[in-house]
Amino acid sequence: MTFPSLPFRGGAGDGGLPHKIARGENPHPNPSPEGEGLYDSKGLNMTNAKLASLMARGTDFLGCEVAILCGAMSWVSERNLVAAISNAGGFGVIACGAMTPELLDREIAATKALTGKPFGVNLITMHPQLFELIEVCAKHEVGHVVLAGGLPPKGSIEAIKEKGAKLICFAPALALAKKLARSGVDALVIEGMEAGGHIGPVSTSVLAQEILPEMASQLPVFVAGGIGRGELIAGYLEMGAAGVQLGTRFACAVESIAHPNFKKAFFRASARDAIASVQIDPRLPVIPVRALKNAGTEAFTAKQREVANLLDSGAVDMGEAQLQIEHYWAGALRRAVIDGDVEGGSLMAGQSVGMVSKEEPVADIIAQLMDEAAAALERRI
Image (cartoon, rainbow, N blue to C red; front, side):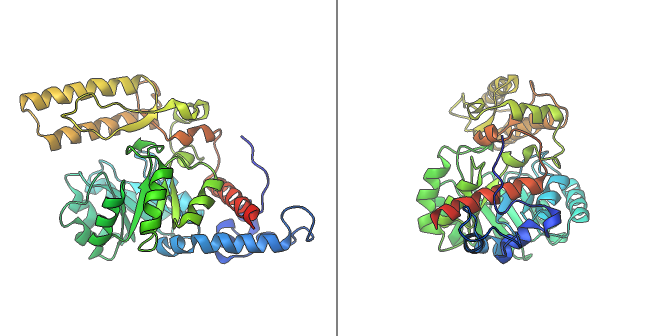
């Protein structure tokens, strides 16, 4: 897939693209004479200022230069990718997943060794050592904690905020968004069913229409799910979003440690190849997972039957059953991402996977997205 050369494309040689966007500067010191082509000097400055203005709330909240968070992808969103995204002006987020406190401690320290820029940590609410993980984040003075996987358990919001961190939570419905805001959450992510990994039942566009008009004036709201191009980013910013979150678009970056087989599977895939898992037992409410169809998706059906039988026998309670499901996905994802088992492992991917066609540096991906967002705003002037 090729993209036109637009006004924000650049790299280290131009003084740093994200810095110039954030400051509202023209990244090209010698623009074309006014009236020659679409990108004259007046248009460039106007567009740049508008994009910076639309992203200002998100960048101020995150402390970065481009209001793009990286989705927390287990085994993928680790020190190398997280640091690369933060160094490129975005906001990297470590996926804690099933890590122990000791492992998270080492991962945060290793990430800090690679970047001096802000980054966050994503914690799963059902983790049995959640409060110890919160303490690890506090020890390292992590500025932003993202809670995912359900409502924050009692005391977790207070534990995070009393250490000075800002708390971001996922809101899959307007009623929950309002409840989280009343509970003291600092920002929200609304993620539609087009996303990869664990998903809800509603599309991103519908969630944005339901939640942004009600909540964007109260606290920063970031939109996620199926975002692969900058034109869509510009649209959500204009609707009131403080920024966006992308995962699939970064999964195959040069800095991603994902196995070459995993990346090749993404390059070959189209949007319709990223399917949601099916729940087979209504007594076992499992969160659907979107991944590329393979033998691993069929194995999940067998795993559900196994866990359902354990529930029937009383061998496990519902909490343990859900944890087993979570561990299944973590293990299956590791086999795909780390070992390159693209048949038996889990190839978690959002429907934007069809827009991932090659391995690119993180800085180029962010530059490209900003090019596209800028061009979209330019056309609106």
